[in-house]
Image (cartoon, rainbow, N blue to C red):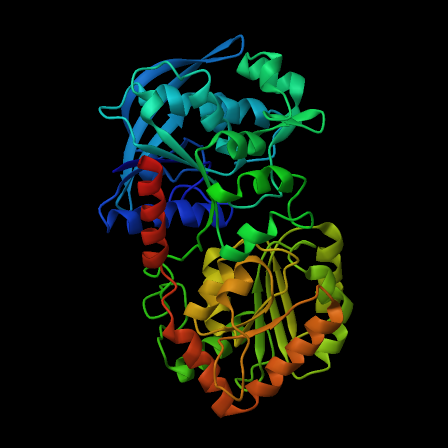
Length: 475
């Protein structure tokens, strides 16, 4: 079976978030069970030179985008064992960063057209195009309309995966109509129309043959108004075609026993974990004390991630004998709140603004607990990485957090973390205090850590589910 992944980012080429981790790791897990996966994505200027210099040009073509006729190169490279096809157009993709420009609709409409034009230059067509998030949402629509008469294209099936429903690629109807050169019939309630505008996410939801999202709970949540982002009605209509498949992590990349970024490699040794803690305390000018519980966070600093809840009770949390290390960037108000807290609690709170992969790994390796009180979380990879590094997660029961973190039951000895339901600061504070109370009991804490270490957080199980979904598509 041949599958073409279409995505806007993938490791080890480019990354802004968890999407890149998934698109980079899942193809390797699928290859292990005999599925031939190629990944196609834009050739950004941010791709490492070592990889970009190894690309081989397969084709040069023109892509018609409305009234525009644009150059497009199709290049190939193998990185980390995965075959990548790169859509080359420097005007659209050789910029300072991946997203956030005023012409996003044009950039990714071009990419969607280029993916389908690229098929004409491949030796064999894929059986399935697996599209990821709104940046590829137009592909199923174009395949069933503009490209339906191309030889062999009618046999190609599409899967559209929702990684985060909040980001939808919504633009004006007039703009997308111009870019797609399509008539009014495409912009109806059953088409791309979205509250007077047009949605690329909705295009994927409407026209893909099957849908999936990245956890069982999130698949249920997005069919309701609270989490459905005004698309819950569309998703409910297609509920029979929607699969919830948990993300995994690349356990070779995220391996505390072989991670070059951590201070002291370790597996099950809590003594080595404490050595990582004191090394991080020293590097970040925290008070050096291996007995002080250290809570880590690596995240976007946004309300969605629950930082408003943290802000409401941060002083109460700091009344406990605890340290807090936060890595991330985000909303100015939240950054200011954390800055003030850091000033008020020197040696106990450290905030590093921005992103640093090496420091992130050190935080996972050093922290005793990992705090993730998200208001919603489609899957979340951070809690899985935390568990892999023997850091006990404290999460809100939503999306993939609910599916992967089981609250500790001291009577049964089960559970790998701590969780709370309502998105309230009071419940967050209560749960943090509960976790700290068990941290002070060595027997309970070692049991919680051991429970977390038992499970495999890799892709093998989920890859089998994707294989089952692909085969159902191919029938």
